[in-house]
Amino acid sequence: MKITIAAVGRLRKGPESALIADYLDRFAKTGRGLGLPPAQVVEIEDKRGGGMAAEAELLSRVLPDGAAIVALDERGEQPTSPDFAARLAGWRDQARDVCFVIGGADGIDPALRARADWQISFSRMVWPHMLARVMLTEQLYRAATILAGGPYHRE
Image 1 (cartoon, rainbow, N blue to C red):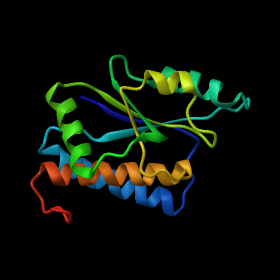
Image 2: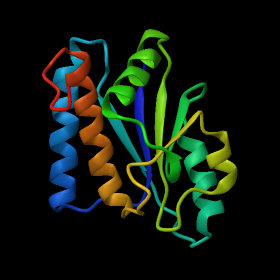
Image 3: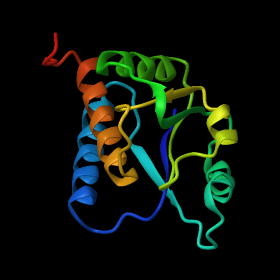
């Protein structure tokens, strides 16, 4: 199993970058004993300004073959953290790669969004894609702690 975060845009050093690195490190340490590999981030950038369609083409090139595609989209399902953890565990148990896709400022091209196995939303509100990365990496870490049997504040 591989876990990939495919995202539009290059993350610069700053508070978001520090949070993402921290959550990815925590996820790697907690997930190791659970059979969850470290997540890798693959960034793409449309330097020609071709919009969502061009971003979708670049994102499609980095999607691992056969991976479950999870599109982060404000129209998606709003799973609970335990639901998210269970889905991640299911992919782990199937030894299936998973790729989380985060679009650019205009979102994810409808054709790529339609290919997704699961569309999730952190809120009906629209979030900057850099904050979406932070929230995704935090949820990956939280999923690992839930799967490890750690205390979960809502149970």
